[in-house]
Image 1 (cartoon, one colour):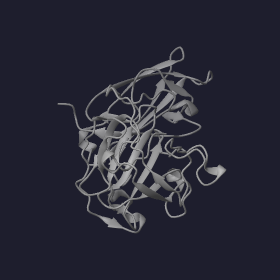
Image 2 (image 1 turned 90 degrees about the vertical axis):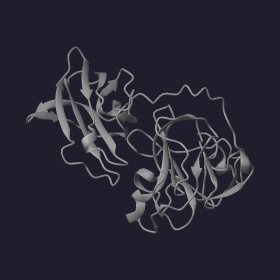
Image 3 (image 1 turned 120 degrees about the vertical axis):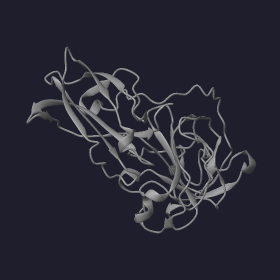
Image 4 (image 1 turned 180 degrees about the vertical axis):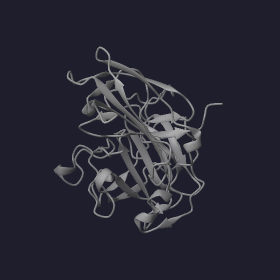
Length: 300
C-alpha cells in the first residue's frame, strides 16, 4: 500500500495515533474488517495514499452521531487505485473536499480535510481499500518502520496504539490513469471479462459493451444482473434487470446501462455476471457477488 493518507507537505513529520485497525470491535467488522482509523484534529489535511482517479465524492454533510444510523452521512472521497481496488477516505470536514469525480490524483495530493461527519465519536480519518465488491483488503504501509516496537509489526501492518509519522511520500505520477478494468473480478463466479469495461465507475445513460469468456466447460449461459442502490444501500424500484445470456463457443458479449431516472446523490450501480444454467425463465447460479460501480452524471 502507499503512504499514510494524512498530513500533506505543510504538515510533514506530523504524528498521528492509530485508534482502530483491522477487526476493531467498535465498527471494523464484516466488509469493513481491514479499515484503519487515524486520530486527527478537524482541519488536518488528508492526501492521496496512492495514484488514481476519483470515482465519488461527498462534501455537503453536516450530520454526525455515535451510532450506525449515521454511517451513510459521512463526507468522503473514493479513488480507483488502478489495480482493481478502491480507496476510501471518510469523515471529512464539511465543504473541505477539493477533488471531483473523474479527476486524476497523485500520491500526496490534497483531497480534503479531516472532520467528524457520519458515524463517529470524535474527529479522525477512516481509511480503507476495498475490492470491486466492496470488501476491504488487508493493508500494509511502507512508511511504517521495518521493526516498530515489536517484530510482529514488521512489514507495515498498522495496529491500534501505534503513533505514526507521515513522511509525505510521493511517487512519479503522469496523470495518465484510467479506471480499473473488471478483468477477473467475476472469476469466482465462473467468468472472466476480456475487454476494458470498468467495474468501479460508470456514467448514467451510457451503453457499455462487456465481452467475456466462461470458465466452466459444462455451462453455456451467463446470468447478467444489474441494479441501482441508494446511498443507504436500498435497491431503487424499477432499476433491477436480469438476463440469462447464451454463451457461444465459450465467449459472450452483452450491453449494460444505468439510467439517470434511477440516480440520486451517492447512487451506486451494481453488476453481477456469473456462469449459470437456464432455470425457470432465468439462470441458476451457484454463487452471487455484485461489483459496485460509482455512478456519475451523463457525459455532456
